[in-house]
Length: 58
Image 1 (cartoon, rainbow, N blue to C red):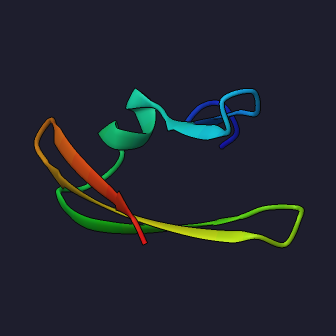
Image 2: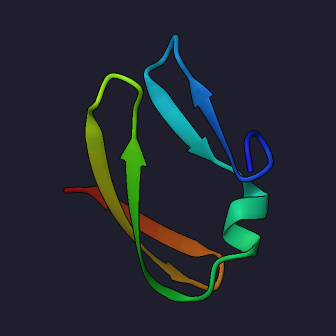
């Protein structure tokens, strides 16, 4: 859901995943794939354990 679970920041070239997103995510490995209008696809993986989140671009 737009701006509820994520919010793009075009000036910083980033995507912010919100607290609501992480609250709805189970602990473990999560793989995300972002599809952009330009056709670019970006994959991102993170591991969530409680309130700790460690992420890495692929």
